[in-house]
Image (cartoon, rainbow, N blue to C red):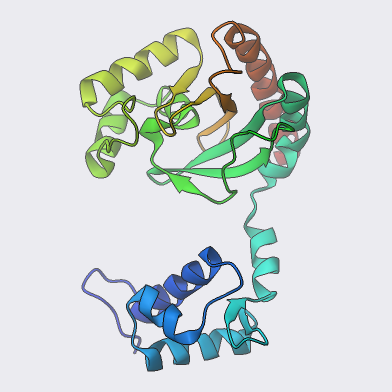
Amino acid sequence: MAETSSAGSVQSVTRAFALLEAIAEAEGGLPLAIAAERTGLAVPTAHRLLGTMQRLGYVHQTEQRRYALGAGLIGLGKRAVPPLADIASPFLERLEEEFNETANLAVLDGDLVLYVAQTPSRHRMRMFTEIGRRVLPHSTGVGKAMLSLMPEDRVEALVERTGLPRFTPATLVTVDTFMADLRLSKRRGFAADDSEQEVGVRCIAVAVPGLDQPTAISVSGPVTRVTSAVVPSLVKSLKAAAEELRAAAMTRAS
């Protein structure tokens, strides 16, 4: 029987994914001892888990005896990308071409925002979020856009679970101010992250209505370029893209 923790998770699976995440964060892979140290595992335990994953193709050893991610993860990664990401690609590209800023697609995955697609800005100084990254919704434009369309009691329950941690001086960290911001977002039809996740970055986001999973599309960039004067045209284009994305997704599903 698999060993389980008090929370009910399978401990060996938790440990294996901790190793994969540690390796993914390291450039050039990790030696066994360092991989064990970073994950808090005994070296024999880490060696056993990595050996299993190596036989399955999910890690491999470099010539320097470092463990690196294996090619077996590529196929899994491709299958994990939601079909919506492919459908959204031309709309994200169009937004980037129009505003020369990074365009993003995100969904609500449990209590977290999951970024599933992105077209990065052509500028050297640009906003960049890794595809697959999960973040708390209260400090992001896409998160607030999605939550603004949800019943308030459901949002309050989510916030009770996640809290409202501060990331910058501008982060909304009280329930009252956050809920007021969501009401404003709903009234005006878009949400904004004004340096609430990262200092100096502004994100304008619009929810994509009518999909099975809460979804939002956004444009992000430095506050020096994504100015108040640009916001009206941004919102107009985002709303158009959101509606076209909804129609394309429903056509694909039918």
